[in-house]
Length: 581
Image 1: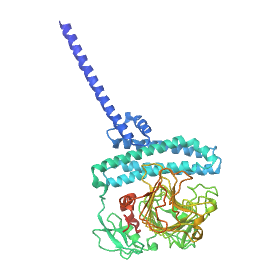
Image 2 (image 1 turned 60 degrees about the vertical axis):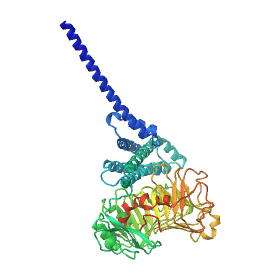
Image 3 (image 1 turned 90 degrees about the horizontal axis):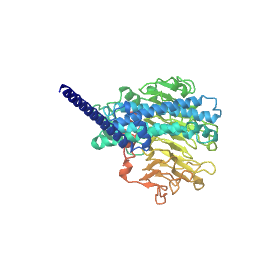
Image 4 (image 1 turned 180 degrees about the horizontal axis):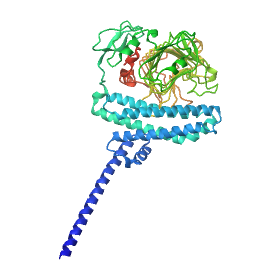
């Protein structure tokens, strides 16, 4: 009898144990199914869903995925790991004895730079996302994260573009393109997930899209530039007006701007300068490059005054040199010039006379010039990859590929850009206001293209916006306009995006308005709004361009397109956040 009782007790215990195990397994399976469901739903909105699913699923054992935010965090981490490995492989290849051609070495050197920059942009995204959503408004998070990831993709594409021209370069291209493209796709997936996350949260809090946490109000004041009203910011607590050059009245500074920056922007260039560059030896340095090299790596503004003179040099402001400002003596007096070109053996990326990559770069009253000439192909006067960079009363003069708006958020006002083929090109989020864009006489059998935008991913927040500008021929082109057709732009990459609005367009622009890329239309977003002049008639435009309405045009103004309210006030330059009246 006792043996029977013991057997029953053991049997009951086994049943209970099995029930617990089954329940535990059931719970684990339920959790796993939930995780897999989150991954599948999240990855479905990316451009490369299979890659997204496989990379995230492969590290399930190390993570507890409960939401789209978790997926974003993992996707950024995966992209960073792959980017670092790719960068190491390219560096090893660039130092190997197998690379003998000059163009190969130059192109790989460019790839080292651009993949370094990919890592830099991903690191900014990871740091920014670690604070999400507690440090700033949702709109700022969304714009910053999309900008960093858009720039990471652009850097990846730039590397491969530099290896796509000659036979020897293409041989090197085949050695890296598979792993390199994998990084690009991982960055693309992270961008799509970030866009989805910030959009979903915004839908639950519409106010976050329009309210900025800035303690100042917007005012309109008179200006001496073409538009009668320029939007500036005024501090609610400080009533003292400060003198501003080119403005009839003053501005009052935002509370968040440091007293030091207020003083710098309110003083003359000589008083504000940290160092002075003078070709005649009367300054701290004789060359701009020396001054940049000696500049500290810091977060506060560092002003390099460049006195009148012609500076024949190539200048590079690297990532480590943040918040540098070049302040010239007027664009007719301070000129930085060089003559690198694709024709003389340089890559387009490395041909620039001046390169500004360190974030927060500003320049005013300077000319950036490349004198290689139309016969030497791509020859860049200024390449910009600096986030929150701005240019005021500057000139960019060259022929093909004058102004390379490579990546990140950029702003140009009261500038002059002159060139021939693709003379404003790249994949930044760039707004050009109240400037003169002047096609000049090109070489034989060439057509002028004002823009060549290179957006490769539908989720990138990039494009070129031309607002309240003047597009007119130079004096050498004027008599022969019919011999050399000029167009507003052509699509360098698949999803090129250019908007021309509130701009005066002369008869220099062909009636079709836009051109193809060697016969390939691609899928561009080429739009016009409220332009005027002999070249602004849209009745003869190509069928794949757009005429947009006011509501759509507003989405491409400085406020939403480059988060203008968040940083343009600190430049001290005039600007317009919305449409001009």
